[in-house]
Image 1: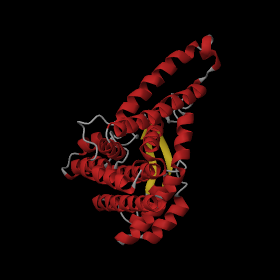
Image 2: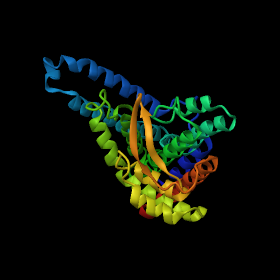
Image 3: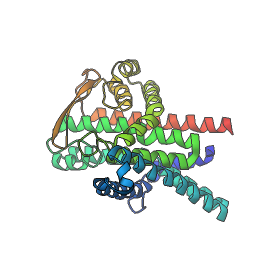
Image 4: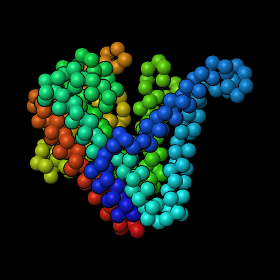
Amino acid sequence: MTPSTFFGAYIVDLIIGDPRWVPHPVIIIGKFVGFLEGKILTNLPLRKGGMWGLLDEKKGGIILWFAVVIPVYFITWGIIEGCSFINLWFGAIITVLLASMTLATRSLYDESKIVINALNNGNIVEARKKLSMIVGRDTENLDEQQIYRAVIETVSENLSDGIVAPMFYLALGGVPLAMTYKAVNTLDSMVGYKNQKYRDIGAFSAKMDDILNWIPARLTGLIIVIASVILRFNWKDSWKIMRRDGRNHSSPNSGIPEAAMAGSLGIQLGGENRYFGEIVRKPTIGDRINVMGRGDVKKTWAVMFASSILMAAACMITLWVIQ
């Protein structure tokens, strides 16, 4: 990965995002995960005989993880090498396009804006429907304030998962490693739940996602603080709340960027949510200094874009120095 390739990927993501007419690798990975998950869950009841006699759902989950992650790395590597062998310029273009598909700055903004636009038009039912496409919680009965909170939480969390972490792995190991990270993230989002169905088969995927996101999440928190300085938001509370409430989350990572964002905006995140019909009470994050509203969502977008620019600049400078 060269600085110019990285820059090209970042610009392509900002301009184009994830057009629906292009088959996105994450969708393909997701279908592959669903296929393998079904095969493993279908065959595990036969574990009294044959190879399945050695497996339970936790071991099946480990097989699922490696069966997805390893092919993604080598297929991505093979595509880039094959295209570069045909023609160096063709290889460079494909590398930029694939790299841009690991980033989610534009798509995160677009998808969250659709929700807010529905609220602005007074259509809360449509806002709930659109929100359900970007969050894991139940959205059918959310009021306006809860929708704002959900949008800010998902933008904050995905600032790490969808922007900073892919950039980190792009700089560290190029497109194959960044695409592998996306596969790990997809596995966690599909099977990494702690409910009865996925508690065992998704345990390994959830743990590996935690490990790969540990450094990026903390980088994201720090970058949010720096972005808050640039934007003249409350950077002191951003730093304070991140340190105080960053662990107030079931995930060891998601709470870090959420806490930094909450402190920057002077709002309170976390609290009660409903998942698959069950109420889940989470610790609160931040202090309720301000009443949450549309302005806070706009500030969240500003922090997101500023943070993405800061992380992209840091990665390009690092690559330039190393190379």
